[in-house]
Image (cartoon, rainbow, N blue to C red):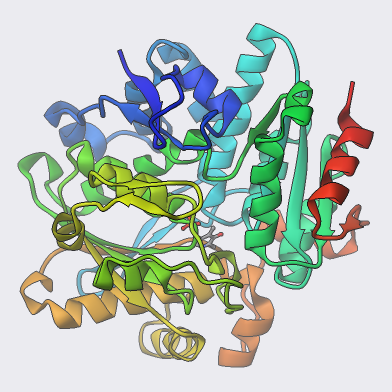
Length: 453
Ligand SMILES: *Cc1c(COP(=O)(O)O)cnc(C)c1O
């Protein structure tokens, strides 16, 4: 039976329900499934023909360990994934996987919508209440807020860096109200994340039933393995072992972790290009074997990737046989050679990102936004260095809709990206947000004042 163990190896193993409700393990480690399920040949062979919600229910079923029935998962996935997931050819065999068609127009909808429904069901079945804390660098907050809006007995607090999210990103979370509270902090994303982590390990807050909706929660990763299978199966004979190249614009490395899970479950992937912005601590780590956080993180136009110490690195290190604790100390080194065979890391600065948006649009008509552009440059960089793989189907993940970054797009190519329905009308709604100093005592006082029963 599948169980969830902590990367810090001290907390007891739990089932999926507890891993989801708890977020972080008691020893401050992150949960990972054991044993890792296999993607059977039969499923890989059928993946191309399955509708996305069906494929998601089949794959998530491998992780459920009896916590959700097949019918539950079918219902959750049909309700969560009611939008298209296009794989678009851009040039030659290079494609974009468009993960920006959900209600908040970023790929975070994939995980948030599953989590909102799964946690809502667990709380309904078991009683009690949950308080979801989430730090956001731009898109997690809105995806989580939308996914949890109106879910009974679950309340949500979103912390965001006041000066590093776009106006549209902010309005997507501050205009909801209801069971969603938003805190604007004069801080970096990493500071917001640190406050959330401190709250989890504070015994005086134990009564609040806190959980995390950041990608420290395993519920954020499992749904993100599905679209890799979906995309690869559309472009290659994956049941026959034909490999695909993926490029993943990365910040906290939750998206990449979803891909790595799929790969370690048997999806044939030639290489993951790991594309970061100027926050290049992971590319440096892969090159040197030495890990050094970037404090404070650098402010780049791909703002959702401004992460100087990605929490999922501990999981990636674990997957490759090492041990990194919650502070980023490498207690045991991973198998770097094997990591380098699977991962090709590239750091892309803002100048190259901007050039890629302008050039790709002029050359192909494909409209990238800053995050997707980082992935696209990473892919081009990798294929230029590996001509032997240039014939393989290649997919770069477009993680947000260009309309979330209208100022940048307008300045670069002089057009206004068409607004998806989900972003219309936002500018006219009233915002509810509270300013808070980036200070744990203030955050804790807020939680106790608002949420103590
Ligand atoms: C969150 C986010 C990323 C980074 O994803 P991680 O899982 O944190 O690596 C990339 N692009 C967009 C648009 C995002 O919102």
